Length: 442
Image (tube, rainbow, N blue to C red; front, side, top):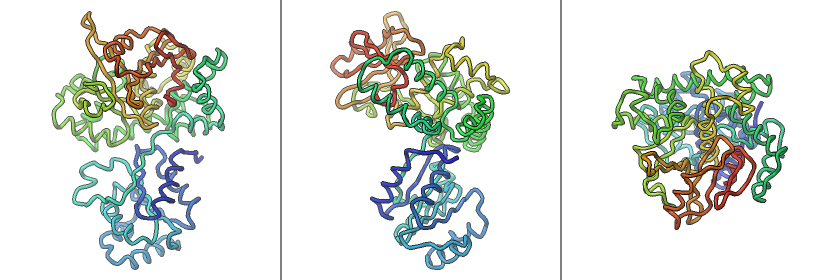
């Protein structure tokens, strides 16, 4: 199945506004649907296209990029190799898995300058040293990131075009929806968290309705990522950092504790590994804001952070990695919100994913309490000239001590204060208690 993706509209904008003056680079984690989206776009928006898949390209294709000074000859050979006619300003050439052919990426500068055709690149791990060594990175690239399917895209895949618009309208009304609607929407968001937004997992869910088979697909994807991390870092540090993410979030520590995961200190080498993991788009990093205010990037602490998975479905499977598979009974208990473990970390990862997918950078803040514990604001958003602090609860309890103390401490900087939880919309004093499914509209 080919799923409807929101990035398609931004690709259309690129085609119409740039008109061949830049190549389009679609970056994202492996298996998020980059190649499928690029091919769909080429089929629907151009008279013809050629797809160069550098994961499976022949020696003859690879040799085309050894010398591209004679572009007439380059395009002549390309059209004959693929038995496809290219039409000036009506055709596109797709460079799939561009990170595997650095010379092809370098050639973009000259191909764009030539102006005959459009170019779409897809890739992951684009900034890894070995993928950019000895080449000039073209400035003629418009970069877009494809994330796992968001909640609305997931509902579209389920042939549901109505739920998310209704949610958005309900959010704007700022009133409770009643238990019947609320219970259904909470079930919808939990299904999304369980399945996740990886297209293969969604396809399996649609065709089998069996969460155990979905889990098997997610395990294959996780193993693929783990293999990539071993390629990035032969010492295994990246792999251990990746697999320890659920444990770190459940530990209630106010940062990712690198030493407990790897027995290595946070030194320059470890920082470089984490940057490369971040470049893979498999993870999201929330940085501690040392001075929480609208310009949070200015006070970002790069030594103090939390790590989330870019897909909560993968996160849940990784959380139960000690089992050969995640039994359906566990999924059913998660679905009904009755699993005995604390599910706070699941909702926290889900909120991180939804915020990052819609464009927000991730920041959090901790500060000591009077009894030597820490208060923590899970997420900080910048809206206008004010901060919006967010506390995430996996239960329906409306306790929000951290929010209260934080807002008192920084009262002049605070706009709305949000408690994300599992109950219906409500207000508790100055705190707005918001169901977690409203996160995309914050």
